[in-house]
Length: 552
Image 1 (cartoon, helix red, strand yellow):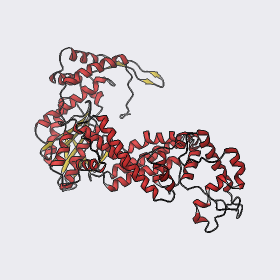
Image 2 (cartoon, one colour; image 1 turned 90 degrees about the horizontal axis):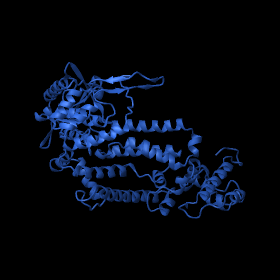
Image 3 (tube, one colour; image 1 turned 180 degrees about the vertical axis):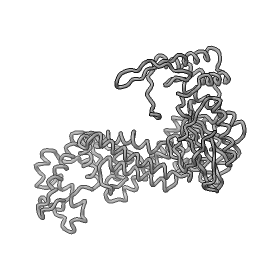
Image 4 (cartoon, one colour; image 1 turned 60 degrees about the vertical axis):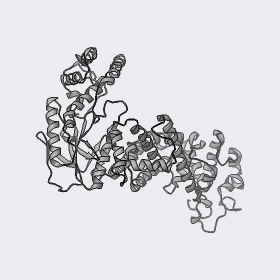
């Protein structure tokens, strides 16, 4: 129960009022650049980008870096209202704004809804409101004020010509130092400030990570009376950070989570139910609920070729499972027919779009880190050098600093998609099973049968288009020289013969019509459906080989 978090339901009218106050407060409330929480235009990606840039450079320079991850226990529940009001007053929030903010946090009452009904009325004492719009800003500023004295000392990790002491996001505090003693001094400062603000840290979530440890097992740090454990990996803001500064651990975990999510989907909705859904609906679930888990914070990845192959294999496996097709299915066919682009394209689009965000705020730590990567560490493969290479690779002529966000997104997305469409089409043109797809398509685009047909029929048509049905023309290795049609014995057994000229399938063809002549199937749902049903019935006849009595 200690980690249980309820959903707070409040008055919508009150939230509108709070939002008006919050917008006014944000215009005058100062923050240090270390704080990303509670600020418009800032996100978890900013902190991940900075942290991983500093860690990776330390790894490449073969020097020690000490990183302490601190998590405040039950942030809003334990927040000291007087300290927050004092902080806001010192930050310049005074007069009517300050009084309204205080009133909104006084005499707050709540009830807990359980399966047995509502509890007694609970009066909230000396803390900020759960679910309040202003609570985010108030708490972010309090944590920022806690760490401001630490930032003023000049301690922290050196990166180029700047020093980065801490990264903050609401109740997550990350300290960085170049020496063991410096980190302990910073921990002492934070502990002293925490006592001042009545803040307690969750011992189980506080840890230290060492990059390039020179003396394993000999380090010891304390946060007050609590000895901090040393870890080789830590889940920070949704991404598993490794002391080796690679994505391997994170990608392994995300790969397992994705497969588990797909398994849950199959468990909740039986195969028969999923089979009757349009395949596009299944793919949309994959694109919106499953793949985003893998792609979280891809904007700040400085991904290696090995990690990129791992990610792409994970995506391929998920797509094959979603379509229920064999593992031998060419991935270029999956991408061309489903309209889903390779992971590499998605990563590059996000990196290029994040580059626009960084440039628009030159005073931010992230912008300074990117500039330092170009000025000081150009000899290394950095995020900045990778992004510059991508701009050249995709032939992007626009100046990101001079165009709007929408324009930059449109230009980069079009360039990346065009490049990868051509790559996938070239790959398909060199494979026997997919050469017909390459000839009939000009880009990666979802086909009409994927969009409109149930999964069972769409799968049959997909396998037909990829020459992967269980007929002799698609499984020559099983038949040797005996390629005669098993139904009529007149000519070779091909899909074209079975669906147009075979005398034994005439009755089926009469019921369902001839196959579509246009290789890029048209949008007539009835024609597509009849084609899938016709192939399915022919396959049912072929499942039992009358010649030798064996199942195919």
